[in-house]
Image (cartoon, rainbow, N blue to C red; front, side):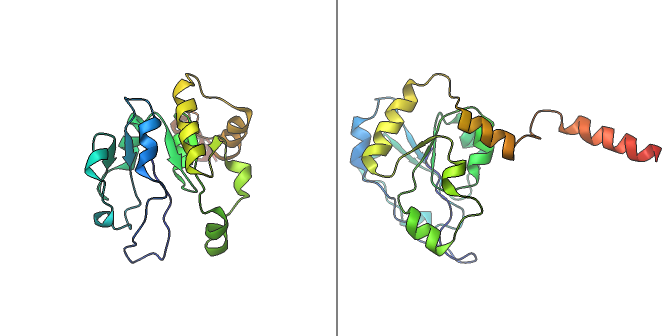
Length: 176
């Protein structure tokens, strides 16, 4: 699934041009499908998938639930989207595709150093993206020390015990 972050000003629908040529799909495995999920504020009607690629590309409407599609996706391709936090918990490969890194940084900036939280492959060109997708298909288990650091830093409380901690907190405060 390709899910880039929002670009532009909030409150107004934005146009978006896909940052790749669909021809790169020909080099990918025959069973590969590219699901494109753009931000709800992006004008999806302006994106046209040429007929010859309709077997490979699924362009989702803006009202589709991205969380459901993350569950079904084998790989997430994104740039700076906060989806990396939820997807990290799924233990699936992620490919960062920051094709406009310098421009985006100048316009919006980052809360953290970009390199410090990119725990998957980073592809800066379409050719690198193509190779990263092919290699991700071969990775049966995805794990890296950088991803583990990311999980510990940002997602350490997502351990399946949140309800228990809340109940313990309620009981502790009830005694006081």
